[in-house]
Image 1 (cartoon, rainbow over the protein chains, first blue to last red):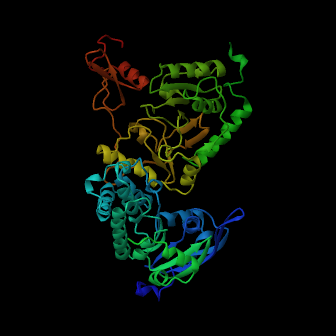
Image 2: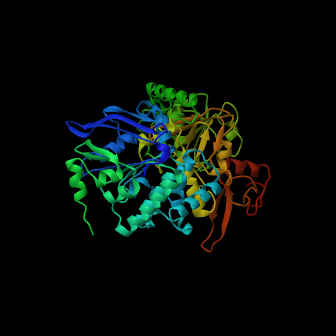
Length: 260
Length: 290
């Protein structure tokens, strides 16, 4: 069992009830409920258009849901004043975009990108900010001498690792990831996954990860939620869902994976 | 054309009333950018339309007006704005900082310390200090509202990372009263220390962007910096070649095509009055009168 031992006794870090988001008459995601415990990684899988990304952006407060409740650490996120909500977004929460260009400031050096969240929460010592940035670049395997280069001079994999460093530098408790390995070739993907797995375990992060790549969740996720047409069709422990899928759609999804 | 063709100080009374309301609000919330219904003025944007509207709203027939451009009283912008108010308001004008009651300025704060009762009006091209970091107005307003000013330090961080020091030398961002981050208009950072604790009222007008902001007398103004890279007001390490002043902001003037140059005070009134007191610089004329 990959479930963290403390996850069973602790109170949920993120608690979602009946979350619904409609786009006019269409459904983005409907009636989604789940609990995420501290240190747990929840994977959300499904085909394109199944509402994974809609769900994630509602969770992260990037768009308002039409119905439902989101409790973070016991506080209702949706009724928080905006100042508090934005403080969460740059402190306790992190959001890793699929395309690193959406999550990075392309005109600012790598060090500035990593330092931005530190400065946003009040760091005012250049030397300390730079030391932390260097440390984090090291943790995501970017050479320290690239600290003053702009992300536009980085490869896709480096940009994605830089985005991860930028998000984790303030020690968030909850990380949202939207297809973090999308658009990367398989060897780079493998290294990134390895790195992510290490960081998640070392820092005890709680993660909601959205992907269509079952290999990614097999490696990273403790629990799995399968979505289809905006609804959750199956949930369970990752290995259980992937090895013994119950729902017809999950069976289709699992059997569609190419075996090399 | 004579002055009689216009209302006093060009703008109609309702417009001046509207601007004064914006000014009062700006003074009540130091550093906050108050939107106002900026008017078309008989000069192009970028020539001081914001400053001129603020000056027009402040002037009374008893005022004595001084207009400076980069510190000088005799440059095109200063001369034409001064003449504009001579014609439309008929107010007295002066070049002496200490005698003026209203001073409109572009890019400088006079060297002579200002006093209570004086009004300093700045011409502002871009009032939003966060603009070059965040192009969306909706977003920058939100950042001001929620005091999210981390981005401003990212800019300073980039300066140090690239140049080894904070290379921003003009329009250096300041924080007013521990609340709003403000662009002091493109004054050199040498002038930043004069913003805070100043006995005069400081008003900032941006015509194209339709914003007014203000510093009441004796405001608390802090230039942003890092603990280990503190703010330093910088100037050319030189003395004025005409009046010999070592503590005023200098312009570099190229005097021939073989690299010869001289440094002179950018504040012409300050320089002239020092020369009148008998101070002489390296290249000053050696006669009795300058």
